[in-house]
Image 1 (cartoon, rainbow, N blue to C red):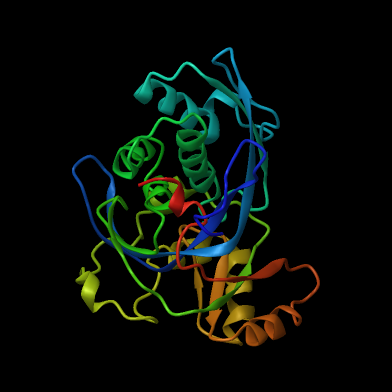
Image 2: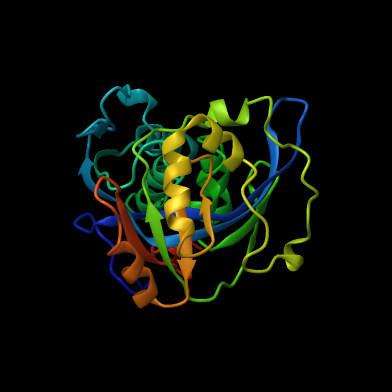
Amino acid sequence: MSSEILWNWQSVYPAPAKLNLFLHVTGRRADGYHLLQTLFRFVDHGDRLHFSPRDDGAVVLTNPLPGVPVESDLTVRAAHLLQAASGCRKGVEISVEKRLPLGGGLGGGSSDAATVLLALNHLWQLGLPRQRLQEIGLALGADVPVFVFGRNAFAEGVGETLQPVALPPAWYVVLEPPVQVPTAAIFGAPELKRDTLPILAADWKPGFGGNDLEAVAVARFPAVAEHLRWLSAFGEARMTGSGACVFAGFDRQEKAEAVIRQLPGGMRGWVAAGLDCHPLHGLVA
């Protein structure tokens, strides 16, 4: 969507999925956080959020996720953090159309939180700059800042050090294995490779690297291995994030759609175009 669009309270605010085109674990900090290098790409598929104004300062999530306490939901936490950072006394009612699976490695919760920050900064007319919103986002999770950053990016550190990367057009087949992969379990696995040599951002090329988390997820979740095997028959397939979703990229939409038409019964997947930037990138300076 263009930055020329007039975004208002009646608008539907997108929260796109991300893919990790590669993901390497290059070390571990003293505090236990892992040092990463990855390439984030946004795709034209994701959740959608709706906002309604409130005058009482309350943040209300109209459709909480089953099993997730409302005050723990990233969308609610994002709105509260934005209120605290800005001194804003306005409230909001949030409704989320979930299209991305939980525990899928597509960044759904992080993307939702970033869309809350971007949309409410605009709707509440706060005027906070992008860098400040990224700082707020980092308090919610390591993947939130890249969605606020709004550009496909080479990321380092715990995922917060970002450099924009121009990527060629591509269409992705994304499969959703019917499992939720807990990120903490993957990063906590003793067999996880944690010593991949880092590269310079300028040295990254399409097709480079792999996903260091994939071997752990495949060993522990047979459904991830099954979906990877099937998709690998059509192209170079990889897992995104800590799983469970897997993907393969194609240079033409027709190729991707030809693959998805062959998807066996019992497997779930979709095709999405790679984006040049986040649909809400133009909302903030």
